[in-house]
Every structure is written in C-alpha cells, then in structure tokens.
Length: 320
Ligand code: TXA
Ligand code: MG
Image (cartoon, rainbow, N blue to C red; front, top):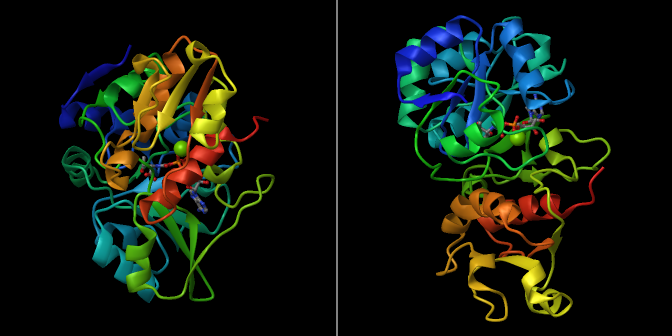
C-alpha cells in the first residue's frame, strides 16, 4: 500500500524523480506527475489504465506560471482566472512547446487549473514544474474524494498519497474553452454555471456524443460503480424490486421500505453543495453493499445540480 502523509518535502522529492504522488484538491484527488516529464506522464496513463486519447489537466499555483507554458491567455480566460482561481475551474489555453504532446493527446490547447487546497498549493509553490493530474481512480470508475479512496484502488501502484482530508467540493472542475472568442463549457463541474454566467454572458454548454467526446470525461459511461446502477423515480423503481436486494441513493428523503443501512441520502436539507460533496463517497459506499442493484434519483437541475445529474446519468449509462 502507498505511504499516506502530509510531507510536502517527501512529495517533492518523489516528483522530481519522475514518481507519481496522489494530491488533494478541493474537487477530487489527483494522480500527479511532473507535467514536463514524459516518463512521469506515461506512468500516469499506465497506473490509471487510461487511453492516450484522453488528455490531462495541468495544475499550477499562479497566473505567472501559467504564462510560462502557454502561448497566450485570452482576455476572458484571464478574467476567469482572476475571478475564480484558485477554484474548481479548468481553462483550455493554447500551449507552448514546454507541454509534451502526451499531455494534450496532440491537441493544440492544454487544460489548466489552479486548485484550491493548502497542501497542494504549498507543494506547487516549491516545484519548478507544473503537475499533470487526472482524477486518481482507475479509468471509468468513481473519482476519489479522500486519501483512503485513492489507497483502496491505486495504493499498490503509487508510492505516496498526500492526505488533505475529504474534498470540500466533491465533483470535478468545470472545464471552459474558447472558440472564436466564444466561451464553451466542455464539462459541467464544481463551479456553478449560474455564477460563471454572471461573468460571461454568452456561454454555451457543449453537447457531447458518447462515441466522439471532446473531453473524454464526457464518455457516456463514466464515474460508474461496478454494480448495476439505475436512475429514475425512486418510489416507482423501488416497487419493482425486493427491498433486500437493493440499495438506494436519494437526494433528501428516506424511503421506509428499504433497510436503513442500504439507504444513502445526499443532503437531508436538500442542499446541492452538500450533495455534491457527498456524491462520490456515497457511490463508493453503495458499491460495497451486499445488494444486487443500486437505485438512484436525479437532484434538482439547477446550479451545481446540473453537474451532479451529469455524473449520475453517466454512472447509469450503458457500459461499453
Ligand atoms: O477537478 C478536476 O478537474 C480533477 C482534479 C484532480 O483537478 N481532475 C480531473 O481530471 O477531473 P480528469 O483527467 O479525470 O478529467 C479531465 C478531463 C477529461 O475529460 C479530459 O478529456 C479533459 O479534462 N481535458 C483535458 N485536457 C483537455 C484538452 N486539452 N481539451 C479538451 N478536454 C481536455
Ligand atoms: Mg476523471
């Protein structure tokens, strides 16, 4: 199993030697390696069992550093960084030659993020390279929101997990790109869309086809538990099953016919922020219960609810 701790110096030494370290962020834990080092990047793809067509996000701690590996930061992109970073936002920017092809799967843009977590910021401050980091889970499975989630699945494959507690946002960053000066959301995420719209009026949310995703986090089946996962109206769904055979994930209500231990509630007060924070650990917990299927319902489709429902639909999508 991996060593788990809060030693920035240890993490730094490992990263300098092309090793991988799992890092906490406010969204989910990342599997980090030196973004300028192709050996480390290749190892990221291998540990995650991730296809090379799925590009990686590059993490750093200041706008000045972003400038060092991009060709330019368009005006609106700079405004977003200034308003919302550090925070759960990733921006696509034209990369310069410092960023290896492997990181972007050959695309001209690199995804850049300034995460908001004190440990990871301290680490980034003492490194003279940025960190490439996808979510620290096997490809297609649920993203990790605690050090033990990472250790459960990748502990055998990586030397160190920087333990920053449980992630306060709980779902991945919102990804925004610019085409012909128009802002496009490539992935809904932890940055509330309504808040973004206050700063950029004309913003389009990309519809993705599952066969040709622009951001492969947008593959139809993703964030998926191993157990059958069925999304719909919980009261209707429950009627179709023997109560002992199922576990349920509800937004805010309990369902008396289901055994207590097989019910998880995202937020008893109906708070979407709390629901987002609890989502992935709830999915992981449900996946370990001795039941035949997991039933779930969507949350209200407003604000963060849009990103939560996106994850729930992908978790429920037909596996390929
Ligand atoms: O919150 C997050 O963004 C977390 C933490 C660790 O920062 N990271 C994360 O990374 O979710 P990952 O690799 O699991 O998801 C990154 C998504 C993928 O769907 C990928 O296709 C997309 O970002 N992406 C990366 N670079 C891209 C690029 N140049 N153009 C379009 N999409 C890109
Ligand atoms: Mg991921």
